[in-house]
Length: 399
Ligand SMILES: Cc1cc2nc3c(=O)[nH]c(=O)nc-3n(C[C@H](O)[C@H](O)[C@H](O)COP(=O)(O)OP(=O)(O)OC[C@H]3O[C@@H](n4cnc5c(N)ncnc54)[C@H](O)[C@@H]3O)c2cc1C
Image (cartoon, rainbow, N blue to C red; front, side, top):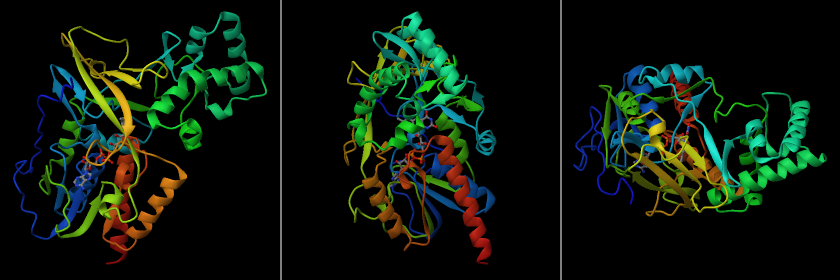
């Protein structure tokens, strides 16, 4: 049974109207932000603070934070929409967030269940030694070091197919680590997925560094993501309305839209497709379930991965909470939009919506839904910061 089935948390940042009550949104709204996820919260904060203008945020859900939303259950900080690890090389973003949270110095490690054992993911020189006999592992390691050098990340298309050993390695990693996972994640054969998805993921890491991310700045907000977003929204110029989906009769001067563009245009050109994920949360009466926060199951199970939440903030509790992830197609009214499906057809549909958006000079689309683009948190934040900056410049020019 899902841990969220029995009770739901309500978060009420300062300035939030009582969830459930119809809020007064009848007066003209100077800045209306749709969505209280990280993109909406950053835009709201920047405008409220730097422009000293009022900002109204409407959020369809009963909580702030969007996909980052977390809350404590049985002493464990649980992330309701799946595991989120903050990582970035963007110093400006890191410094900005530092005003709203302290960080727990967490470094993410992922294991993959391959051929009956749990090996480091991305596949690296340690994984190599776990799955191959010593003579083959020695030979592969020498060839990899010679061709790419220590400390490099190699994506699958980069592994040369004219060398018998490296071709074997490429096939092994493709079959055992990527193929099953990709099929489950996207519900498609890999050939139908944009190659950019594979190129983005380091398939073989030529080092013994088992960390999943190598970014300069990494961590988990010490008091959780919801507390961080709550601080972002806690400003006298910001008013947040939960349980409040955008309505056509809301009057605004400027609208910042972090929902899906097709929804803004009432599906005039059709729905933008997404993948969704069902999270099956389980509370277990044992200290720990697995060695690391996330274990991938590329091959043998119908879920893609299991996450154990107490690893993130090193929570001390008698029991533990895990989630199994079951990817599925997004279906309106049934589940949440999670991953934009990046392929040519969907990019063309999105481009048509962007063309339509040009007719709305006071409406700005952003965020992982608004831009129909998979953004890591730091990218979503950088995009929101840049949008406010650009807008400020263009407003100055027009004065
Ligand atoms: C399973 C999963 C794991 C991830 N893990 C990581 C990770 O480890 N590290 C990382 O950096 N990134 C990760 N990400 C990406 C991260 O979730 C996004 O970068 C982030 O959520 C983007 O925030 P956002 O505000 O743009 O969108 P969202 O978080 O989706 O917020 C949008 C908000 O708008 C609201 N909304 C939409 N339409 C309306 C409407 N019509 N009216 C009112 N409200 C509306 C929604 O309810 C939602 O709350 C992960 C994503 C997924 C799906």
